[in-house]
Image 1 (cartoon, rainbow, N blue to C red):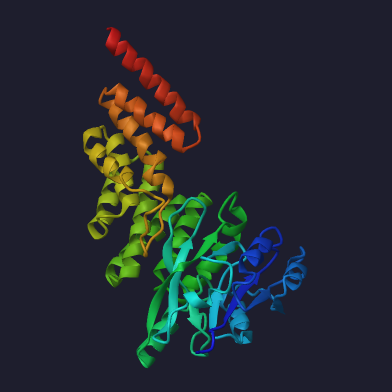
Image 2 (cartoon, rainbow, N blue to C red):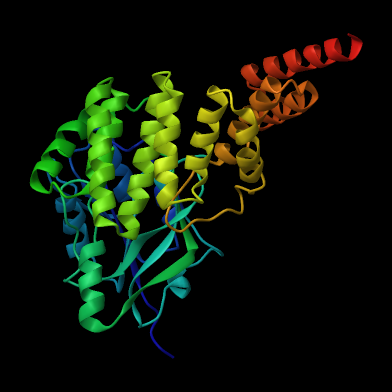
Length: 377
């Protein structure tokens, strides 16, 4: 019988005491060891890691995510590396080691399921790779091993497999994100200065600038990211272009410019016609432009998708798009078309899926009143 493959979980942390215990609990008994690289915690994170049996290393934070990641990988002795964050939780069938879920010898890495935020659908991300000195993290922000893995695959004739029974659930994007924006902005600027071709960093810079109120700069960077992605024309870059178009359409709607939102969403749909987020943006713009009949079919096709079963390996979407967001727009479309009974039905569905959000409850009630008035007129 072949020896069982071993796995090291490697993570970096700084002041994660409020979240890291659940991460450790999810890893207990599932991996062979845990390696934590602490970058300057003062809140008890280190003590919690030691109590959980993790190997703890220290490296001062120097605005570089790859450096502590690689320190942890260098210290790992297992066959495989699982990289995970303190605000992520591992989920997999059973209760023992996840070794049986790892791919065979033909693979040097694997993509597993990742839910990037609460309320989003999963997608597949490369989070598992063999403990090979040729595979190390690159880039100071949005660090990744994808390019290293690609080179190893080409050299060795191996592949990136799917390990979709293994799942990571991310819980760190809830609540106020101002502290992250303040940290990320100078790092993003530095990352782009060093590697101006990194489209995702340009996208992230755009949404960060929008979040802190620097809208014109946000629009400029998001448009630059779209142009760069379209020129590159790879699958990954076109995915980023779609994200940029979604962000730009949202900004246009916030600026009360549905004509521009429609143009941007249709531009994105030229490359990703099945993208439900861009379809939703298009429908929203059509309703604002008083073209509800064109929006209805789009929205009805979106709500036919079960967000609990939906899986796009390339992109994650907010589950609300498939439920309350689209039901709410359907209610608005039918209300505009004077179909008040249908409007009430869809506003009520939006209220049900949003745990009774007052806006939808009120609109359902108004639709009911209008419908009654029409019947008694």
